[in-house]
Length: 321
Image (cartoon, rainbow, N blue to C red; front, side):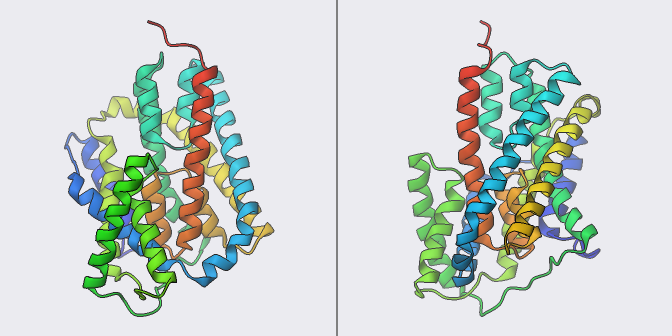
């Protein structure tokens, strides 16, 4: 991917290769220690990228968040309608297949309720992998700049170690409080405070960022373990429809945000695309999008989806005993 100039190569390359090998019957699992380390390093890199320009752009975020909300609602209801009318799914299966995010919570609910859990899991996994590949591909086709190089001197490895350790502690606190992606958000908060306060200046070295992004790419691809070709054909059509709707809504709302604000289209596209939280934030880092903008919008998406899922629990048909 890197040699052919594909954006976010260290994310998309491993995701594609691991997904292909998983479909061929190989099993991959990233040890939890490596996951936490990758999340902490990426969160620290995100915090190091927050600067005065990011803070000046906050005034335009309400407009952007409004378009994001509209896109999420349209995406969900349109996808659910298509799943019921075209693919004959019951309401609970259609709704959970159509939720644009929150994979772990959606899968857990599908197992507890009267749904086609296998279909839901496969569609949601397709969504994550496809958007991981489609967003940089779209940027390449549209000729959008994705090769922004970080400015300034890099932090020393000693400074990185300090921030990672403090960020890991903050992540443990957020995890105990039930916060989303605690090992990513905690280090980001710590790194942002230290950088805006001038205590530890500098950016994360690119070789460290690339290593962390590579691990997250492997995680995205490993979701397809034990997926057979027959299952791929069975669920592929429904997944393709769900993904098409998601991509269409993301592009439309990103364009609306671009014309209504000074926020770059690519930054909005990465921030609005309902892929995996860690993968989308890693992609934002890889293509040079404002890290505070991308991370805040994906966290907002998770909180909004949590409220939507809670609403679905109350309104969907009760599971049969």
